[in-house]
Image (cartoon, rainbow, N blue to C red; front, side, top):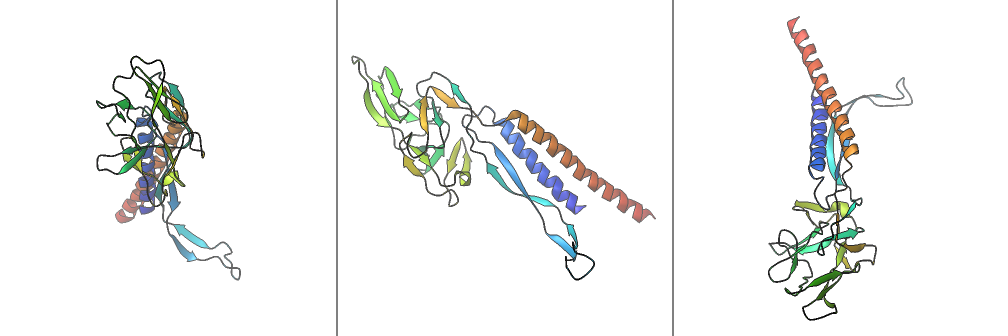
Length: 252
């Protein structure tokens, strides 16, 4: 009975992960998660041995558990928006932003805006790192694939460079800690962020007027949901069967 409980609990976590993936279908730059399972300790009634009649041994498993939720950083679909401050990262890099507590956060969400002072910020008002400031009266903004930000002021027919956007990469990006708000922070597992110019060192390039959609595969998630539901039902059926056996025994 308790073995089936561990299986049902593991499948409940799997359903929770699938639900979160589906809930973030419209979240810019979202990366889907996948749970990883492992079996629990075994009761070794008779270990395998070559000198007796049990070459395979006799073991009883005690269930399973979720040991990790791995984030899949495969690329999402690039969608054209034609907005000059929308940026899609075509590669494995991250934008860096300064959080409210002064620490650095990293994001794949390139839906950027200008604040009242002309600073390029996220939709939550967090400034890019290093900061980039555009003249508040700029008539045109151009961001190259290499991250160079150019602006044209009134009375001028040419674009002038006002800053540069950098991308950051990690030795193990699956080790990043998700903070919510489309932000990640580095951990000992992820390693230290390395800054690079977009288009160099394999961090990818910037695509102006585009956004990266979530990499959630709806069909795959729905199939996984069905499998998780059936596995959950099977485990609860085992619990019910065990209960019926115990009830039968106690009534005899």
